[in-house]
Length: 599
Ligand code: AGP
Image (cartoon, protein in one colour):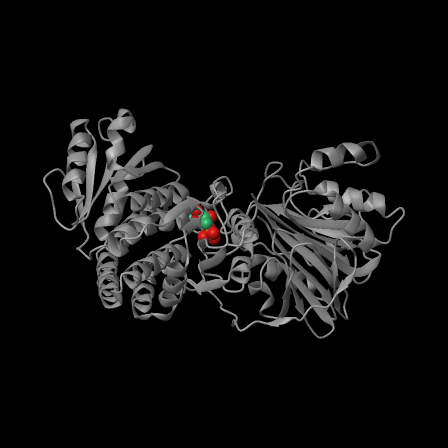
């Protein structure tokens, strides 16, 4: 899942435009970055002084790592440029594997998002005629275009190349000898932006907002040819022109700042009490979903990562509050369990980005079986938002930090409101959410104790989190946060499962977090804490009351089923504190990206 940006038009600072554009897309991957520039006046890049540049038609600068405060070294005046930020799938994190990739002549460049699944076969077909300089799947595309241009015009060579590739891909190509950008999508997202004598392309709409609100979200198998004057959209299979009606975005340019916090994650954690409170006041969304669930014969919650943990929590909330069964499945596994999906089924997809490929795939398949698709999505206008019959805004606001926090808490709040709605107890639902908002504010206010605890953990290799019932998905979420930003192996599990294996890993001084809210699971959770203590573990209790078995105790007052929210918030702050103490960047953890657009 990489970030793609491109510009063609009247201005001569195309390089700066695409460089700024790619910075807004760094959440999609930050292993390396690169720009490809067609200078307005053919200059030798040596004179332009760009590091890593070539001396052929297209000037390329690419570097390893995050863009951060990197600056381009006096880029040539240009009215046509592309840029890319990479999340490595094929080939290590090297400068050669960074995009753009050039063909042997240096006059064609491509940037790519996705996986060309048959790249190896294609590479073999071309190998003896072309020199490959990278280990990527993407580079094969530029050599195929080069090869096909021996007989075809540029855009047709790009189209034919794309048709020969399998997998979910978004490909953008430029050619030093033609004033156009050719872009094709099948799976991975692409948006084009219409301007006055200038056109834009990006992996999402947010990066285009500073320049235009008039956009077209490329559908699967659509090709866009951008020239200075216009954008034409074609069907990539038939090569026929398509008449599309551009959309006007109602989003405003949200300059997402840290508001004085050290990191986006910390800022986003502090926004949660207001978000929970706001959702406690909303009714409309849960009423629409309630109606859809009543109509459906079989309702399935699907999501990935943290969003899946919200789905799992949904099954407990629906069962205990609404006395209703609802299924929850990891989206990437749903494909193997959907044989019973039919036109009476309701699939509720949960996603922050709305671009996660595993979810998009699962939803598209369920749609082909006639299922109704509802979704709770944080990015309005995203692919999932657009393909849903009933898209519900999650309302957490832009989430920049890769670790999903306020979005997850907002999803839990929606599911709590929905469960009470289904039981005809909207007011009670609103009351427990208001309580959870207040308690979350109190936990944040008193986070010093959590930060102190973090110092106990930074050298630990393993941390276990246990709980029962609704706390079980909370253990998984807290473990996820600790893993993804502090790089410590953390495992969440149903407390009842401990003695069936994992207990073998617990030894003297192993930190174990026990979630013991004031519900029917309290006694059994304390018993689990005793079992752990008997093996020498350090017990950290997160509970409404202290207990002698706890070596460390973090109070979370009882908010009924909504206690799961402040409990997870304790885990979020713990993970953040450990990462900070280890000097890690919690906003851009290694090997991860905010939106996973590959399978
Ligand atoms: C969570 O912190 C992770 N970043 C990740 O597991 C995330 O929840 C998952 O990739 C799903 O993303 P989505 O909500 O954008 O679909």
